[in-house]
Image (tube, rainbow, N blue to C red; front, side):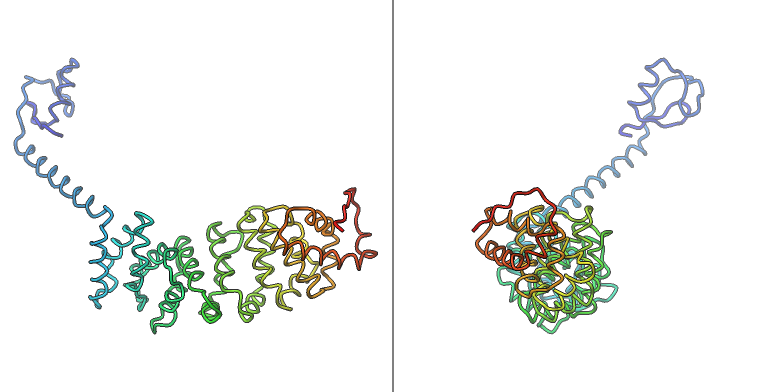
Length: 387
């Protein structure tokens, strides 16, 4: 209602609305259906004043909310960060962190500005009252991590400053929603800068088990990719590799590679890269070639089928198990999936010198075993020898 008026029945209407009703030939009160003795309008001054008061309050509230939602300036953010640093008792002030989060979302330059001030966030507490606030802090760090130039300093800030920030990140990975898990996986990947940090992350609070759960076929595709990237980042130390192998990671990677609903280009590349890393250990090679050789057969099937990067990782896995360490079971798995044919075709392709050397080494292995291996083929492909 903008201009309230009352009819002779005592019922109040908006002036424009009741005028349209009467102009349409009606002679009754719409609410009571009484016949109108007259069609005079009586302004309802009290209701008019209440409407004006309400409208003014709505406009003021909208103006305040608009100002609050607008991205803060750098000066405002600098002041907010100083406040967080100084006010020790209110370190996780939710309003301040929400303002910083809006600022970070606004632009790449803003995230770069925050990257130089990453030490204002502390995860000292995981009390129930503060968890939602700490989640905001995790989101901020996840957004600005790509802009942080000194990864080692940031890693030390999280791992070695006497405050258990890593435990908090792991806690949120275990208990958070998909978006928060992705943010945590990204942070864990970012702080894995050396062997010490990678081991520290991998051996923290059952994290590996939680990571494994996140790469099941039922998981969100973005979470699968983020988790695989995290696993790649922490997997280089031997003790971490052995831990991943014990937790049956190779079996899970094989499932991902064979499932058409999860085996995107990116997921396939990451799975093969992890297998390449695990193939550097005796235990990893045994698992890759174990059982009916399904893992290795799957690797062969991915040759020339996904991307250049995926093919290079697959070749390295084959080279590790077949040539470098000469696993006997590898020969049968490769030949049963037309692996030698693919090796010959790859040698004729525009592959890198490193890949070409590995392919040549592989071909030597199968030439030595040509009587037992090449006889397994039933193919009409013309083999063009490169030498």
